[in-house]
Image 1 (tube, rainbow, N blue to C red):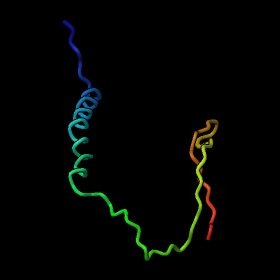
Image 2: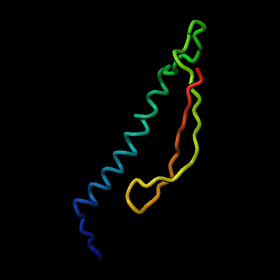
Image 3: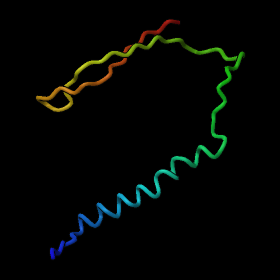
Length: 80
């Protein structure tokens, strides 16, 4: 018969995972029970202060020296 020693690290990993499985789904689904949908109707009286055109494109940047990280870069221009 083998005896497994439970370390503090393994205990916390096990109980933390169990807690996450029990608590988080109900936490995220509670907003579905309420009518939390924002009003998506445009206001016909709205007049924007500025209009911009945004574009996104994939790129690579050095966040830490020697390694490139894939990111999305955004560029924009003022239309009016």
